[in-house]
Image 1: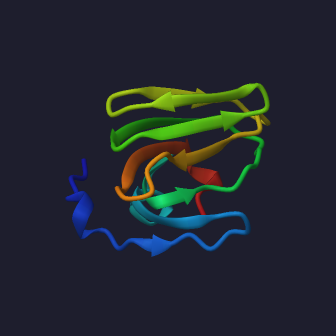
Image 2 (image 1 turned 90 degrees about the horizontal axis):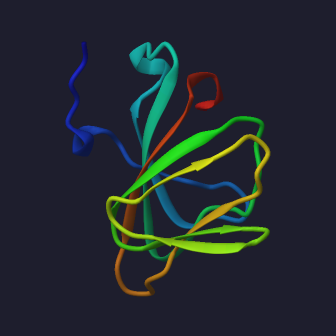
Length: 116
């Protein structure tokens, strides 16, 4: 068993093309010998967003703070603290902080082999 305070994990700026004002903390992943899933905390600064993208694995998120819009080809859904979402393999999507003044935070789980 491992227990780790989330704020003691280093936040790295996400530098992928199409990203704006996002940091990521890997809470559990390959370095912690997680066997199946990587748990990451994403902080989306004011106006921040992930790229509009798809990938060959599902992932689940839960919003902890702020309001995040989950965008997809059919439109978008507003997610508030406590709301969870599952994005299936190859579904195009983007997470966008709806605020231009307040940060938003979400936890994201992916298969550990896709955690870089």
